[in-house]
Image (cartoon, rainbow, N blue to C red; front, side, top):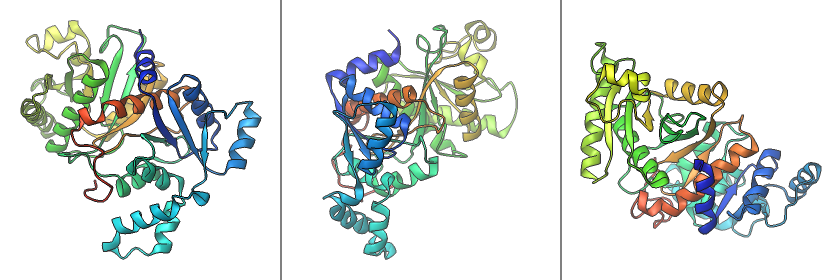
Length: 353
């Protein structure tokens, strides 16, 4: 069974509440309707009720089972304003400024998730990545014992020989422009843990470079090699059953015949199901190339390292893409305390990215 189908079945057994701040966007309305129709949980659209109703009517989409919430009319607004002001009291934030922030759907949605009034948040179909991440970083804690937030894409490709029966996890594709060795190792371990809980199989993590095992001598390749070694140490300390290798060129990571030539002793080469990119340019470019050129189903970016589940979808996402991301965020919510023991037990404000 394809990955997203199995995720849908899992979420049907454990339905969740997902908030969509871009409530009047047609693709979001269609995804929310499907989320309810598939019995995945309760979709929450933020925005003006009349505007959302008009868009849904034009689309001939029923809003039965879809909750609509206007931040400006919410009985929770004053409480959210007080909470947000308390988070940033050290900066001298005024009540009027806190209210202005909370009237913005992405801030209101982030606070809903932080205050456990929703199980996850999906935004980005209209807003830029910065407009989605900034509210989350200002409202939601880092997960316990976590220092790094990263964006992960889950891709399904037609050729099942790649990854895990055609499923690949790719990170970081949207958050850290130039990760340090420590950050790169954190991203590798976090993505491996995420892949393990979603697929239930041993992650095989390739830290990618233009070099394979010293085939080229350059500081950037050495940085990836050092990050791979550190990631193995972190995974061992966390008792995470995973295989990690690097630095590897992408063909050595994915193609068995090439792997046998370049690094025959590797447990990862030729069989990688998790790809970790050396910096944001390569991760972002690769995820878009696979989606558009290889016509892969691309679900992301799923945010890893936050205390509560959230995702920033691409502005070019279809309703199907948004539904898939919402499904994964819902499944992430099921497993979140396993992924991050102690997550979600604190009110926002203790730690922030």
